[in-house]
Length: 337
Image (cartoon, rainbow, N blue to C red):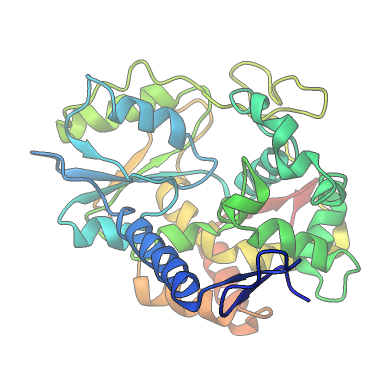
């Protein structure tokens, strides 16, 4: 017999406790209203005279920028109330210009993987109580990078279900990291509008690149003090990268390279349109209102075509675009062509 049930009160000595239907209904309605309020609270807060809205793409310096935006040295940028809830289209709908940081897609995927498994320096205090450290998701924490990619890309992989849990888990289930960290770039850059500002990620030159952008746009924000925060940890509990240098992404198994290229094709195309001219030594690297060959309908078409498998026509088109640009996307030890 259930311990809780909807119905008349039971006798005082009964082993089962029965809850009145009106009380159960009130609880359910209250929960639904709470969820509705929470979803509406995700909107950009009103900020007088703000001209820009920050789109927090996971694992792309978002926390460092958010701290500057919320501080006393910035009055020109609005930021979301809850992390990773605002898309480019949401910022445009609010009448603001989107500010977006673009990170190389494969690099961002690896960073999300490390963050999910090991947490970060600022979240280490939560690790002991997080589901990643418990039996609930302990198996997923032990999956190495190669098997994670296999489960992510190969529909017949024995690791498919485990990776699916990692990439779709809600925040309440997975603690410091959740499924949105694995969301593709084109989920957040859903318009690629000419009014958007795209700043190319650099761990070493992030403050310089943001400051260069702010100066050109006369943005009332001082980004000179932007520093890396919340660095991902290794399994040893130490920061994953040396100061000022990105940790190289491990080689991708040869049998998965084409599948990975197809999965990242749309994101790579977005990144290339705005950051292909940057090098790791470039201190000023952003794209402001550059139209080029940006076509939002094409981005959405390719993204939809890759759901559930590889869109051969879209991949061929992107390969042709790469050849025209003379650009090859490196996946692992050598370029894939």
